[in-house]
Image 1 (cartoon, rainbow, N blue to C red):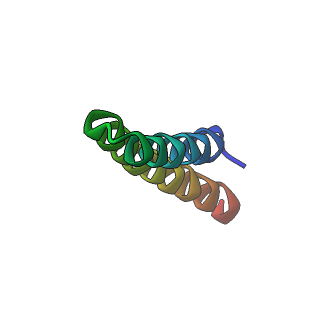
Image 2 (image 1 turned 60 degrees about the horizontal axis):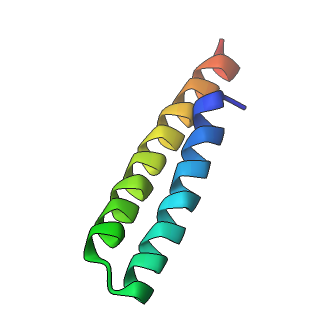
Length: 58
């Protein structure tokens, strides 16, 4: 498994937690940061998946 997939998954989880806390505390800045972290994590996870696919096909 590519390092980007692992790191992307962790960012996604961190973003979900941050977003949830932001909603619970009424902190819109923290909620927005959580959404950004989730999006960044999803992208990084996708890139890692592509790298894995390329390695398997060669």
